[in-house]
Image (tube, rainbow, N blue to C red; front, side, top):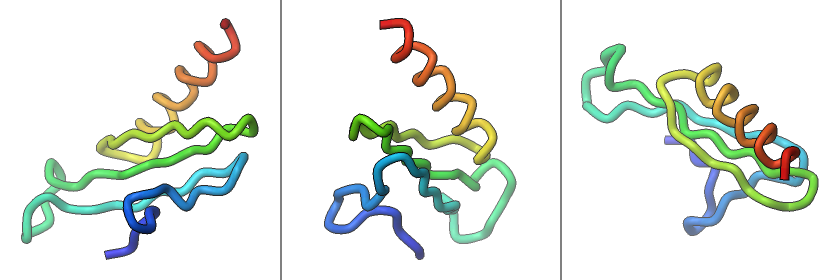
Amino acid sequence: MNSINHNGISVCPTGEEKYVYFNLTPRPRAKSRFCQYDYRHTDGELFYTVGHSLEKCREKRDLWLQSKAEK
């Protein structure tokens, strides 16, 4: 399996996103497929989440960015 981590630490560069899909069961099914998503803000802070699709992960990221901007 591809990984976006090395020794448990995200390898996501500043200002970029990395993601990988994985299955929780040996036989791929729609409900067992997930996306692991990392985004490192330009200030160096890491956002990470898991969702059923890349689009859902990006929606969560956008909410995080919005809350960060409001601070």
